[in-house]
Each structure stands twice: as structure tokens, then as C-alpha cells.
Image 1 (cartoon, one colour):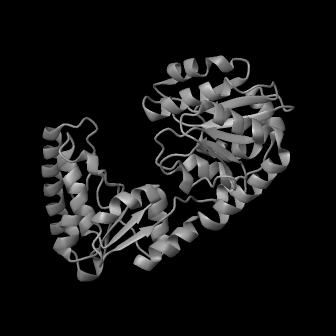
Image 2: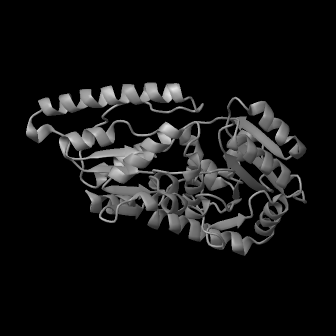
Amino acid sequence: MARLLMRTLEAAGAVVELASDFRAYDGRGDPERQRALRDAGTELADDLIEQYRRRGQDDRPTAWFTYHLYHKAPDWLGPRVAAALDIPYLVAEASFAPKRAGGPWDLGHTAAAEAIRAAEWVFCLTRLDMACVQPLVPAWHHLRFLPPFLHAATFAAAKANRGAMAKRFGLDPGKRWLLAVAMMRPGDKLASYRRLGAALSRLDGDDWQLLVIGDGSARDDVAAALAPLKGKLTMPGALADTDLPSIYAASDLYLWPGVGEAYGMAYLEAQATGLPVIAGNERGIPDVVLDERTGLLTQPGDDGAFAAATRRLLDDSRLRHKLSQAARAFVNDERTVVTAAKIIGEAL
């Protein structure tokens, strides 16, 4: 998404310069580390200010844009640099959780709130984030919904070659192919794999196979979670990004429960090729999958409902086709760099 935002800024007419590779992330809730990151960020911000001031007036930045700030990764650079240079400060995918106040990330929580208040433009990629961020945004600043998007052309142009895919992955071309694409790591990803295994173990019939693309440190745990699907499961590991469009295009359904999913780029990738989605109705997923229009959303944690939704689409080819056409149109008409550039261009 960060790369897509840079591309979008350029499409909107900006010259983009990556200001720093400073990483403000503290995943442990360590106040001492957070203070060290704050001090390092402050020092780096002051260095940047001096560098920019030494430039000619026409070569200085005219705005600062920060992506993805929250309590674990506050922005120690942007507000300070923007204020010193008297330039607009813009942020995208800012999130704010009031429950973090006074906790182990209190320093980052407070800094994130201050940065959001300072931003002239705040772009939220989900309506859930918007609701939490809105109380912090002054009335004279701007809060905009910037729906998740992607460079859709690559996926829209993908060709389905089921014969080659069947041979490559040992799939039965006479069955429906269910697809999941995700990293295999502890936490929400593993929880999603466990939900997927529990749901599909309830799915009757012998008319489907599951192809799982991905790898990671939790691969053994994922294999255990999907063990009940033995005989219907193929796990080739991680594949190149360039392989994915044709795999999406050749599959029949995209399945991913999406436990704790912020929004999920793979949902957009799948839909861009015309692949209907079945997912959990939680967090930012409703902002990228339209229930009963481009896919089916089920109650989070309801494995029976997830299995029933899958069976419904396996049995109803007309509905599958309807969702497929709508999914392709939704992403390629509404969720592209071009549409995002119109929104960001207004701010620029």
C-alpha cells in the first residue's frame, strides 16, 4: 500500500521523495524503547529540517505525507518537519484506539493522537478507522475516506489457464477450485487458517479442492489446522507475485476468514480478476468486499455459516457468475490508482 500511495501521489501530479527509512515500530509495548525511538526520531527530524533549509526554495518539499501511523508506530518526523518548514502535513491510514491510553504503548498512543490532530488532511482506508479518528480531527481540517485500491490492470488482464494450473498443482479440472493466499505467521494469520480449516471440515461433497498459496514461520501450525482437509488440499508454498493473477483468474472462489484483517489487499486482487470472495464480516473487510454483490460475508467465528456460504456458491453457478462480473467491475471501476488519485489530488 505504501508503494501504491507513492504511485498515486505521482499520478495526482506530485514529485515524490522518500524522506527517510526510519522505523518507529515497537511491537513489545516497551516504554524505554519508545522513548529511544522518540529521541532518535526527533534528532532525525531536526537533521531533515536543516537539510531542507539548505536547499534552494524551489527544491524544498511543499508537503509532508505519512502512511500508517498508530500507537505502535507513531510519526516522530512529519509533524515536526512540517511545522518547521510551514508546509501541509497529510497522513493516510492513521488509526487511533482510545483503549490504549495509559497502557504499555501510552507514549506512542499520545504521539499518534497529536499527529492526527496536526494533519491538515487525514485519509482513512476503512470506515472503522474513520469513526475512531474523527474526534481528533479539528473542524477546519479534512477527514476523507480513501478506500483501499490497487494497480488493477495487471489482474484485470490475467488469463485463466486451468489446464496448465491443474498440471502444475495436481488439481482436478473437473472440480471447483477454492483459493486462499496469505502468509503463514503466528497471530491473526494463523487464526484465519484455523478458522478456514474448521469451516471447510464442515463442507460436504467431493466437488472441490483447496489451493493455499503462502509460507512462513507458522507453516507447520497451518498444516495441522488444515489436516482435516487431507486429500482435498494442495499447499505449494510461496509463489512469485507475478504468478498470482493467473491463479486467481483460474480459480472458482476466494476464501479467507480474515481474522483481525485491516482490509486485505488479496481480496481486491481476487475480485479484480473476477473471483468471488467469501470472508468474515469484520474490521475493514466490508470496505473491500461487498456482501451479496461481489462476495459473501459471514459472521466472524461462525464456521458453519462460512461453510454454508461456500456450499451456496459451489451449487449456484448463476450466482457465482453474477458475483464474478460485479467483483471485476467494482475493483476496476472504483478501486484503482486512478480513482485514488482523484481523491488525493483534491488535497494536493
